[in-house]
Amino acid sequence: MKSSAPPPSAEPFLKWAGGKSQLLKQFNELKLFPAKTRYKRYFEPFLGGGAVFFHLQPSNTVLADLNEDLINCYKVMKKSPELLIKTIENSGFKNNRSVYNRMREKYNHENLSEIDRAAILIYLNKTCFNGLYRVNNNGKFNVPFGVNGYSTLFQETNIHAVSNLLKTAVLKVGSFETILQDVGKNDFAYLDPPYDPIKNLPPNFTKYTKPSFLRREQAVLADIFRDLDRRGALVMLSNSDTPNVRKLYKGFRIIPLKAKRLINCNGEKRGTVGEVVVLNY
Ligand SMILES: C[S@@+](CC[C@H](N)C(=O)[O-])C[C@H]1O[C@@H](n2cnc3c(N)ncnc32)[C@H](O)[C@@H]1O
Image (cartoon, rainbow, N blue to C red; front, side):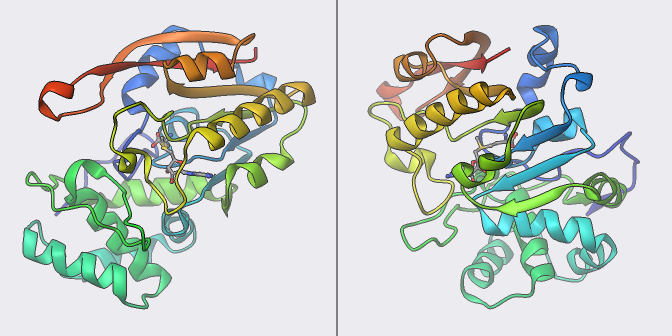
């Protein structure tokens, strides 16, 4: 159930749809991150699994997401790593469909403690289909069991390493508009919103949280990007390579990446879309 091989340093403990782990190598090769000496504080308002945060391990950080349970999980990691480990070990988690369905039911309908919610979220995330976090219109987690399950549910040493890394981090639940209000001169903000919606894709594709993230939100974010630029912050944004994104960020450096994402597994409509990074520096 757990592996005791010590990881060299804290690393993501969740698989997160849209996570940037596979792009880090390219980000480095293309030298997309600013030198740490260029910024005082790091902001990541669309945290998800936090691939970039764990990679950079900046010291003065504000980490946020609209997903309350996700941020609860980070808070529990930070505050009570030992209790979290014990709870995961003693919750009866198993790598099979019937336990998965029971835990999903519990997660959706029971009034759980913060620790239990964090433990079940980690279990569901590792056991569900593709590490997806998707909710229905009532805000209930509705991802099915993923046939392959997990090879490692958690690493004890990593939970402690994450807890240490988070000691100085400020963790917030909120929408990006609010979180980014505090960004100022010499701060660095990494923005990884849900992907720009693509025509003909099912609307659920971007539904990480109950409020959807659609064209309007993409436009609001682009306005804030310009505002942060005027305030003297360093800003880096990831998104799909779509005409809308290119239009919204016209005038900034738009760097296409090599990776292509599969956007629909549905027979004839199968296709790929590229990704871009937008920089104001
Ligand atoms: C593409 S994922 C981020 C993935 C992350 N960078 C990683 O490497 O795992 C987008 C995240 O934005 C969050 N989100 C959706 N709408 C939001 C909003 N209005 N404000 C802040 N976060 C939001 C989702 O909950 C999701 O975790």
